[in-house]
Length: 176
Image (cartoon, rainbow, N blue to C red; front, side, top):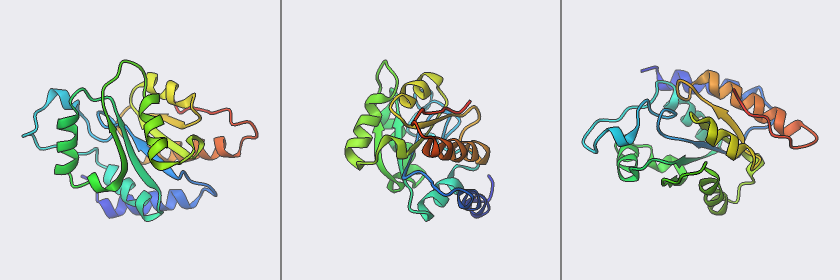
């Protein structure tokens, strides 16, 4: 696992490059924060995050950026247990972990209701393009990750967020 403080420092440096950063960053869980599906594991397993996730989350908290979860896990009890085991539950202002057949617009409507953060002030990371497409239509800058959240995906997210924020028409661009 990469050194949390080193990753945090790099993430803080990245954020310092941009004039505007998101007010809220929303993460999917499975294959975004951690490299597995909760429904394929049990509560007794020991969960672990992708190597750079914790440092990035600490950098965001340091900059007073709120964090939230939007997950369609069919096993929210296991997901919640893992968040507790990882000691990161308290980092999130909203945790929307429930299954539905569509994309995650319902999750984001609930997050918006709880936080009052406008959609265009949010940045979202997920490994499912269907979720990226649906949430982007709300005005959320949405980034598709293929190997979990890491500094490369984080930089891409901040870059596209900044471009979306500065574009005259909020014609929301999506990551890969």
